[in-house]
Image (cartoon, rainbow, N blue to C red; front, top):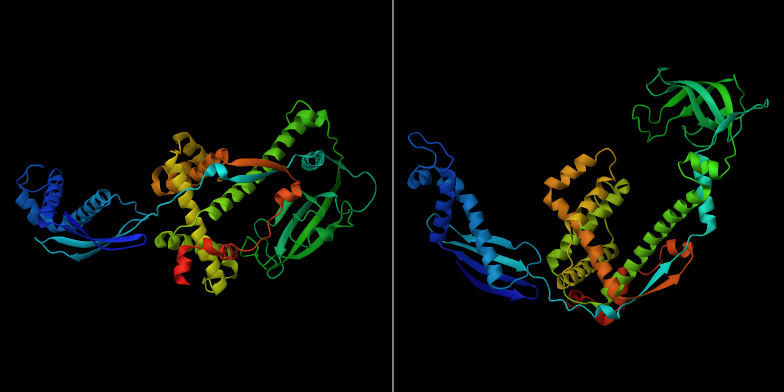
Length: 462
């Protein structure tokens, strides 16, 4: 095998690689000997078929596989011999090949840049922290109490009103053909007036009714109704009011806590406060991570591999397309020049930050353990109740998907490593401040405002 560098510029290098005919023949012989161990040919035992017969019968059939093997082996040697750090899979283009002749191909390798990571100990990050107030615990308790309330019959002689819970029988039919449909009937159904549980307009027609009243409720199914055959259809529900119930006031005390399986009201409050604080801490984590990534982006400026940026840009485009699916015409995504420029800038930021974090992890031997990957898979499986086994099997068989799951785990671990080195100060904030979405200039405007810190690619383009 021979390799000759024929072109080099910035983060790209191109080689012309020659794999000799003798090496190709060696690969063919090796592959045919493997085939000969199992192939059945009349007059020969498996594993005893002469090589010349195998070559006549199967030589051409294995050639494609052999060429791929030869190119992979030669390319790996070129990368190793020249101490290259490819950013992506090399691009291969065969220039010459014929039976009994050398294989000549070009190999274009996009390289990772040399990254000089800033002094991480010089980073100064502010962590916003919010403490749980008694009001937040009380509001959560009220919501829990409202979903665990008990009801009692209305004893006074009055008509129904919003907030009442009616016990009803109903039988539905479409107005167009007067035919009943599956799912349009129920007996002893409980319906809270004003809750919005039923089709719009249904509950309003039952306000002001008494026990024993029979009401012909007329409604129109929404255009986006889940049952396609009923979507947009007018319908009539023959409804009988069998009882009017009202919610009993739920006292939040030790007895209420015991109904939920806890020892006391204090234990219930402690659990709620811990959960809310955990939610606050997650928000705080998101804010401090955002601040850290912004600081790292500000401090590093280097050329990034064009191929990596293009791939990330396509990923972002796909994400935007999914978010705008409902408003797309003919499934085509149309962006303004300003939007395209902004998305390119975001793709560049993501790639640059990914490379910085990867370099920090590599230089400091940050590793992902099997236990951490198992937890990541379990967390992902919990997002699909009832389908956990299928999720586990999917990741067991799909190496690429597992690697995609590894990336955010690695990123978070590197972020934690950097935060340990950085100077992080806590700042007490209100919940409103913690949850407030930051209104700021676009990332593109930020990059343009950095002047000398603009990406090299932008400088060259300008």
